[in-house]
Length: 190
Image (tube, rainbow, N blue to C red; front, top):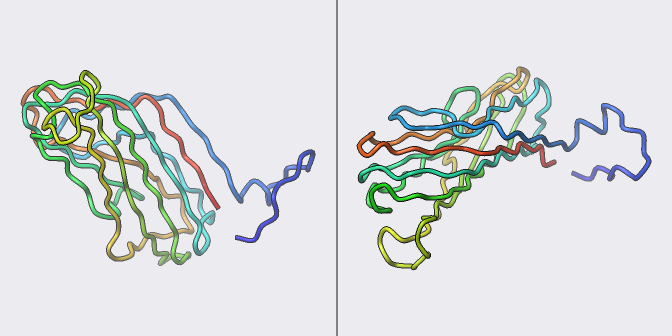
């Protein structure tokens, strides 16, 4: 906060680069099982990069096929540990074998840095059936939005590199449900 903007023509130094950055990829990831698996690409928050109140954002989007009444759960993970609540979309939300598009975004804020660093996070997203027109209030023809967040801080060392990822899992595999990412965007936002 309070840092000067990078000016046109300014020499880019490490001090400037460690403020705000972003990267993206179009590596596909598919979730079609009942244990958490990454749906976004995994990005590393470099050792020592997070200071108090530093924020990161991870976004991913893609498409999928709904199973036969199989619920899906989403979560954010930092260094392999779930951070925040894990919203679940009920299995009856869409019709069996319905095609859908999705977007997911998680934000992560370092509350305090150091070997006992603390973090808070939120995850939000939208799933929209893509084969039919969206009719609000009509079961199985909807767009569904959700959010989840931390209720208490999570402890994770900021002096080491930490992997940051969005994960998902299906409640079951009846009807062969799939969720496939087409791109991921990672940003340090302050």
